[in-house]
Image 1 (cartoon, one colour):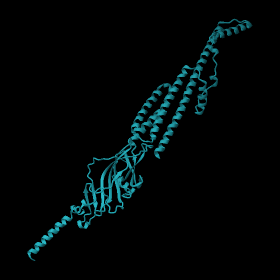
Image 2 (tube, one colour; image 1 turned 180 degrees about the vertical axis):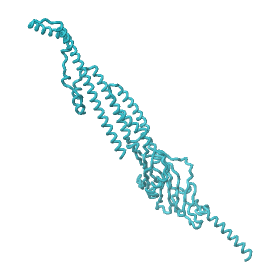
Image 3 (cartoon, rainbow, N blue to C red; image 1 turned 90 degrees about the vertical axis):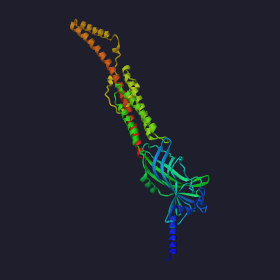
Image 4 (tube, rainbow, N blue to C red; image 1 turned 30 degrees about the vertical axis):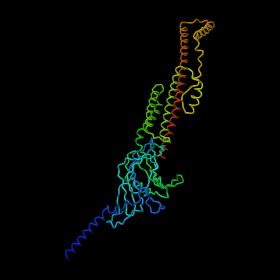
Length: 461
């Protein structure tokens, strides 16, 4: 073989190698697509305008950044993905060393006008570079981290054991369903499985479930395709149990225990006022922690009712203390107190006490007369005179001493009767106080037990 022919073969092989290296680059793929001649970002990439573009939506919930209970705003971090087809883009991977996918940067291709309907704020200062991933069959994938700030209606009846469901609705705000059809890329089971693998909890909320469904929104006689994700989260209640529930229960138990402090000691009223002040501090903490919503949390109802019962029991303790002091100023117990409290209310409450009716009706009017002693002495002297006239016996010194002794005994008897009546009046006031306190304690127990039963049933359901 001659040298010119060998040189020609070498040059041809060298050119072939260079041509092969150029074809195997991503730049050759992009040059072959001639992106500048493709429809711009404002034109939907279909060859027949009557054919809708199908857009597949998918996301991975990475974390719940915050759920502002006062503003009812949910802030999440998503790994978002959207896939559609550009009918003007395609190439044969065999001609480019099996290159099946390329990525381009920028906004040179059409992108669906995706909108989150619950969005309240957009992060326009994001420094993340956005790429389009293009496959050989014209499928375009748009992926980006997405920080969403959306509204979320809270239902806080079971607070702090509540479960909240927030909605993310993805859809177009320009193209109708005849132009764009939104579909989920994965079903609900796949979405929750993927989310639980990567979900990072900040301690406030735990992810329970994610469901997805498609729906059509009718607005101004125009149908829009939507993909709706419902994110179900459960609140971590340990902070609220330690800071609210346990202190509230302790203060309620202390207030119940204060009812067993003797009213005569005078310490019960000051103790109950201290408990009420402590419970008011718990209400201030509750006001800062409780979410703002149209619903009223049952924990707030429980605390308000407990506060009302504490104040009411303090008022009743003041009234019973006043009844106790009346025993020192009023010797007679009013008839209505004897009838309604000592008689009927004591019988209804099964309050048993020892009483003697004959002692309660002792009349001491004769003994209160000022000349009681003089009349007694005169009566004795008259009887003695009659006896002396009949028997003609003169009184001896011993008989006179006995007379004086009888007079002194009668005086002592008078004082004893008076003190007995006073003691019986004091005893009746004390019995009335004990009956009223038992009534309040029973009512207190019934209300607190009913509240606990209702609260536990609400939280457990």
